[in-house]
Image (cartoon, rainbow, N blue to C red; front, side, top):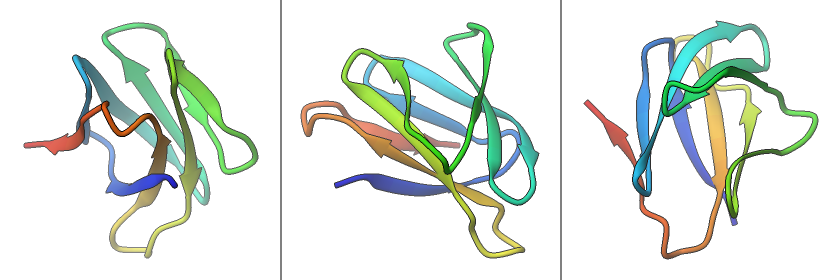
Length: 84
């Protein structure tokens, strides 16, 4: 089961000991992210993208006012949380 979080440009998410920064939103279903200051990755709703060992992500369309969503699939031992 995936953990789905609503995101906007500038959102930051902790995935274990790593950080995922949302760099851009491309409506209706693309999200551009960067993991640990690495290269930018375009995440879509068409397929899962492996961003870390045993961690994959895909996007989803959120409500118009709340932006898009990122759905993370990872082992339960990996803590995923939104950062302020």
